[in-house]
Image 1 (tube, helix red, strand yellow):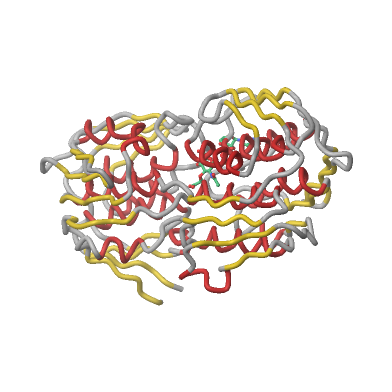
Image 2 (cartoon, protein in one colour; image 1 turned 180 degrees about the horizontal axis):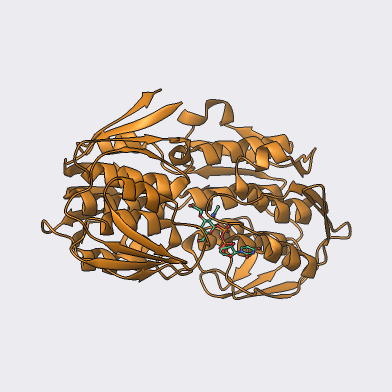
Length: 424
Ligand code: EPZ
């Protein structure tokens, strides 16, 4: 087992290379199943989630060049010409819920898909009812047996009008991929507008898919019979960039996020300015600097894009724990995404939870402690707290962090943080 140990109190000065987007990479990799041609993809971040996804694809018979040298591969070359298996087994899906994203493309390409129900995770039940009902509207026959989703469309899928009852990133991704090979036109209403969906759409269009309305809540897809080969570079990870900007907020100092562009973070820059972080845009980076010794408190509500993202909520809570005032954080996306709060309280934070509200009363200093990571974003909020806390913080179960933050210890060491991985 490994843990991360941090001696807090040191401001951050240096450069951080922003890696490719985890969430965009996962949906782009899933959509490789739609094509029988070779696709080359640059910018896939080196994470356990992307490694598992490439393993899952190769279990379907997809040729994955670069998987055997995953850590050093810059460009992954995939070829889904021959799909020899269309079952995503429980043992793989339980390791990575995003495996549900193979359902739509497998179904559209082969007419049959058997995918283990992903089950919940620590942040919530994570149902997939909207995915399934929408695929049925495209003509799929779906039933669930012994924890598996059986989906069939032997005569192929047929375009239709889909209206999501609520905004769902995953369901928008699954339906968009399935619609690309469906016969006729599909309209997706109340679609998610996250930039990662736009990135997926641009990847699909680079292979010849006909898609309009990307980045809006109404996406139109004209089905095609086949997709061509492509070369594509995944967008950078806006949540990773936002996390490092909040690292400067909590620890102080000045860091340059290389690769970050303003459009990647527009949703978030006004919040940074309000709490007391300045930023300067250069031609290939954004420099973040905390402009005073104290941080302002702020009330935020997590919402679908372009609102404040739920994936930055835990990180912001850590920052608000040492702000000069009281902040109210409302989590509207997931029903149980405050697992980091008890761990922050163990570090001296003053946080009260009431349903989906977290009332955070800023304190002068956090104190280092032994804490436990519970999910990806909760774990990184503990790293941020450790950077600012007095004394030593040990974070256990850091496999959560490795799912979504490439080389986080190295990147923070490079900015002067006193942080290291230790094998227990
Ligand atoms: C995606 O999850 C991301 N994961 C999440 O990132 C992100 O937090 C989330 O979108 C919201 O932005 C990937 O892209 C791999 P949703 P997803 O479907 O698709 C409910 C991270 O930390 N819902 O938009 O699962 C659901 O329970 C991860 O990188 C249904 O009720 O999110 C939730 O309350 C965590 N039925 C809400 O909708 C459904 O069929 C939004 O979920 C689907 C979802």
